Image (tube, rainbow, N blue to C red; front, top):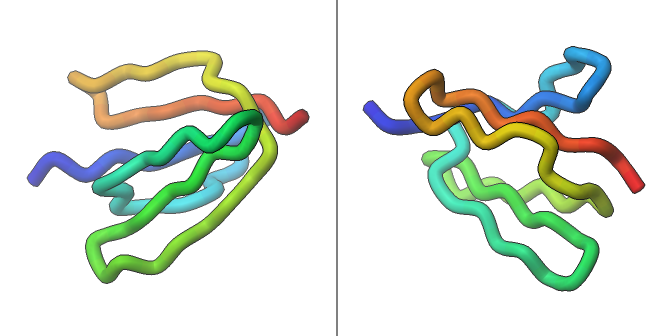
Length: 59
């Protein structure tokens, strides 16, 4: 499967099994495989697509 896990820069898991990311200004919207949504004001630090790992910093 191609889902990713989103982490805060301190290593805390924000959301697992993320399939879709929407950038809306300074807000990132994450959607998982069940279409659950989590929003956070943040910026991307690392997009490791091969490792299925996304790291963000909260604004």
